[in-house]
Image (cartoon, rainbow, N blue to C red; front, side, top):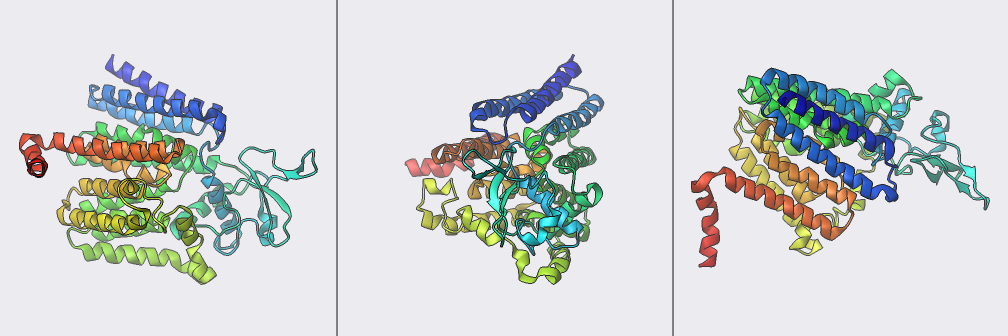
Length: 460
């Protein structure tokens, strides 16, 4: 009966995932309510399925975790991306590289690349009733080529700026297109996302079992709706970053620090933000991890620097400015208490202090809690608009069993689905409260008394 209940809940989660991908329009504002309802339903089924799994015998639980991971991931491939256009850029960067051209050299609408444009990424513009150019295909917008200013339709966002992605991510995009060629649309990256997701599931099952922990916790990754939607349906490269950060952590914790450093360097060269995973891995013989990570990062950049020089920086400075990190407007939680002009230095101090604490207190054999605190705190302080940044956090929720940290990706999802500043502030503040309350509950009576003593002194 327990197996059957768990299996039905997982199947229902897969069915709801497939429905959301197939039926909800791409960034269609008319479907916002339905999309929010589907997201809420998916997370509810996820919680119920995991609760039911806890009573299932271990061997059966492992089978259900693996089958469920494949079933939910397969359902997430039922349709094209539905809340992001990033995978269109990934595909284009891969196509460009398959012709021996650096992705940093030209912007996508440059006339020099006109012969490389597949129809599914650059459908032809049509004339509207008024004689103006327009795009009728879903997921596309009207732009123009440079320097000829010819009307173009494209599925690529920010098509007039260079790519933002570091070299490990670019090599990943190139490898996918080397196998599939330019014609397949979105499914190649979705399939690689599914394979990466299954790889993390297996890594977690093995790591939990070898370290004497309950392998059922791997379901927190395997069935997570965020992994299905953002790692597979929308195929975000953060999935590769999560795989490499987890690999680095497991290698370093097993004493293989040079190999762990190589994995960490590759993770940082995938999307830069995995650098926040470093402090928890530097407790013992840090020089091995640091040297290996820096060397790997540099080696991955060499061919692109030789091809395009300083242009490998891409659109990164413009992106940070666009997202409001240069003027402090993007630090949603901190703007509750501080003027925008003060948020950037305060955020830097908080993250630096967190990094030092994590470095000093992390267990070199079990650094997962340090990773959880460092990555989770960074996401709360920086508060990106995009929930897929939290993919890197989820493996460490599974390794620690600290389920309350799921409030972080949930808060970021609220921030994406309901783009209201006050609601975003409330969601992130609620996530902080949930984590603090859970921490107090975990410390026991003596620990709670120590933590609450300063507050009592303030009242007196």
